[in-house]
Amino acid sequence: MRLTFTGLVFLFTFYLQAQRDYIYGSVTDSASKESIPSAHLKNLSAGLVTNSNSTGSFKIPAKIGDTLIVTHIGYESLFHITSAQDFIAPVIFLLQEKTSFLSEVEVNVFPEYVRFKEKILETEPEKNFRITLPKVVISYQPPTAEEMQNPVLAPQVGILFNLEDITKKGREKKKLKKLLAQKAVHQKFDRRLVQELTNLEGKELTDFMDYCGLSTKYLSRSTLFEINEKVIELYSKCKSQQEGENQDT
Image 1: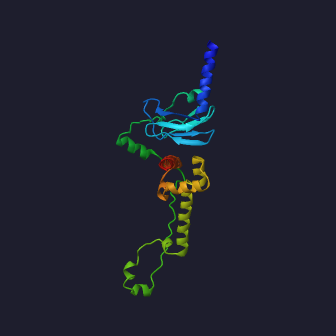
Image 2 (image 1 turned 120 degrees about the vertical axis):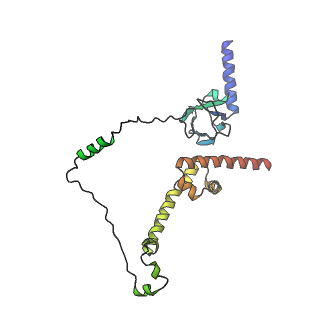
Image 3 (image 1 turned 180 degrees about the horizontal axis):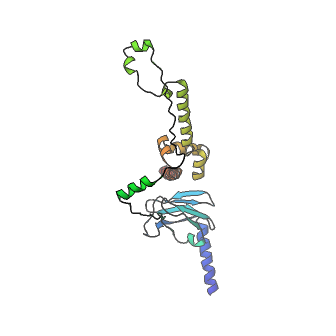
């Protein structure tokens, strides 16, 4: 009788797994037990990603033996290997908040003014002590007689300006700096990065990157992790919109 019951449980579990190719549940703070929205979940075995919603709930395709990683800013990463139990009941991922330790601070009593002055006077300077000042090169082009007679230019004599703003070589140098800065910014948001996060290819990948609409200003002031989080959020939003349009049609 006991063997028969165990066999029935095994068959029931196998049946549930055969009927469902995903797991679902919630992401929760291990200390406060509060839900964690916008947590990042990735199935490393299948290369699929998703986010928890505003209530901390999630749903992600998986099968037994897959390795999942759950991450969120301010929390320790959590690795999980799916088992048959995960396909029977909701899975609750408990994330532990990161703890920052400050180094010890040593507090010394500052000496009174008279003693402090004596210490300074008793201190002998190092031998061969020398202060080296940076070289300052001043380039000045005296105005021509024609410029001095011009009533518009004459009052401006003596005003300092940056030669890079008016010379051809200077303008080319500034243009090169701008191009290099733009290249560094767009390396944070390229096709390879977006493809790894979404598994999109070809035209779908191009259309989704256009859909993201991330400005150069946003990319320059955001970290790579923040950009990854934004792409995942926009991908989930885009999929929801597409599913809604398919249901309407």
